[in-house]
Amino acid sequence: MLPGAAAAIAKLNDADYPVIVVSNQSGVARGYFPESVVTEVNQLMQRELEKSGARLDGIYYCPHTLSDGCECRKPKLGMVQRAAAEHSIDTGESFFVGDRRSDIELGHNAGGKSILVRTGYGEGEFAWQMEKWPKPPEFVAIDLAEAVKWILGKTR
Image (cartoon, rainbow, N blue to C red; front, side, top):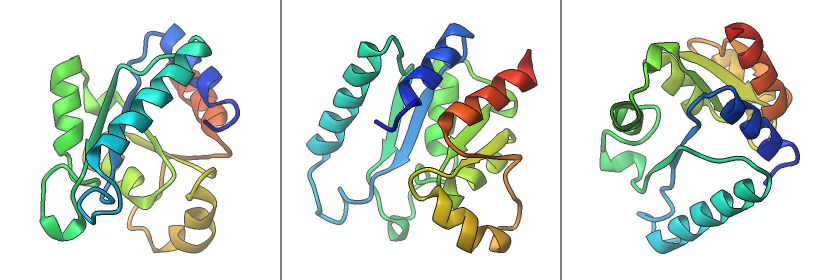
C-alpha cells in the first residue's frame, strides 16, 4: 500500500463515492502466478484498507493477455460496464485514476474523467509516453491523495 492511499480512499468513502478497483492481471494467463494469488492480494489489500478505516466497494480484474481479445481487458469497457451495472454507477460522471495509459484510455472510453497518478508506473508514463497519447488525462496528480483532493474539489 502506497503511503497516503488508504487515507485518500477513506476520504472518497466519507464523501459517499463508490471506490472500485479494475486491473489487468495478465500474469495469470501467462502462467506467472495462479489466479488464487490475485485473490489473495486483493483480500490483503482490503484488510489493509480496513485497518485504516477505508474500504473498496468492488474489485474486478482481467486475467487475460492482450492477444486473448477479451472484452474485459483495459482499456476495453467490460469490467467497467459490469461494475457500473452492479453498483448503479454512471460512468460519465465517474473519475478514473491510474498510473498507466490503459487507465487513462479506459476513463475516456467510459465517458468519464481520467487522472494519471505519478506513482507506480505513472512517472515513466508521464515522462516518456504521454506526448504519444491520443488524448491526455484531465488531471495529472503526484499521488492518489492529490487526485482525491482534485476529485472532491470538482464535485463539491
